Image 1 (cartoon, rainbow, N blue to C red):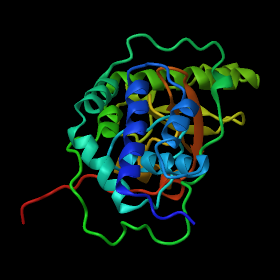
Image 2: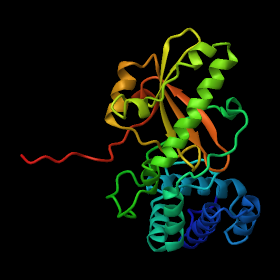
Image 3: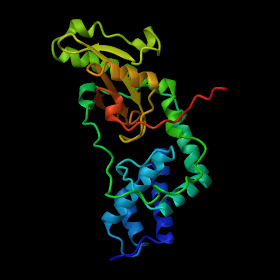
Image 4: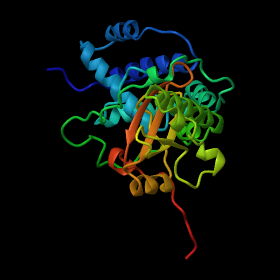
Length: 283
C-alpha cells in the first residue's frame, strides 16, 4: 500500500495542473493524457486513477478559492490539507494564473457564439458533487488565508455575459415552443429583466406547452459545468414561492461551446447554498 502523497509529489502535481489551467485560460491547446503520463514519471508509482483523483481534488479546491478549473476534471472534495495549502500558496504567487483568470472573468461577449440549433445544446444537469465517505481532512482545522478576489463571482457580475446568456435563453424558449407547435405562446415570451428590471426574481417569462407560465432565471458562465452559481435572496424566495413554475437555466462553456442544463423548482432544494455577503447595520 502506497504512503500518503509527499510534499514533493503534491508540489509537482499542482504545478502540472496549474500549467494546464493556464493554457486553457489562454486558449492554448494541450493534451491531458500526455500531461498525466509525464507527471506519472515524476511520482512514486502512483496509478493513473490516483493522479486523476488528485486532479479532481485540485478542481474542488480551485472552486472553493474562487477560481475556474480544468475542464474534464470533475471536482472531488475531501482532499488532504497539504494539497489545499499548496494550491492556495501557488495561487497567491502565480500572477500568470491570476491575470488570465481576471481577463477571462471580465471579458465581455462582443459577438454571441454561432449556434445553429439551440435545442441541441441541452444536456443533463450535473450529478451532486462526488464525495468520499468520512469527514474532510481539513474540516476541523482553522481556515487558511485565501486569495483576495473570487473570480467566479467577478464573472457572475459580468453584465454583457449575463445579457448574452439571457438572449440565448430567449431563443432557446422560442425554438422549444415552436417545436411543439406553440408559435402563439412563443410570440408572448417576455424578457422580464429588460422590461421590468431585476426585482421580479427571474429573467424570462415563458410558457409550458399547456400555456402555464414558466419563470426562468438565467445563469451564464464561460467556465465548466460544475462552476458555482451566484443567486440572490430574492431569486431564492421567488423560486420557493413559485417552485412549480420556476427554472434555473445554466449556460456553461458559453464562449467556446455553449451548453445548457435546466434545474426546476426551489433553488434551496437543488443547490447547497452558502452565504457570501452580509449586511452590517449599526446597532
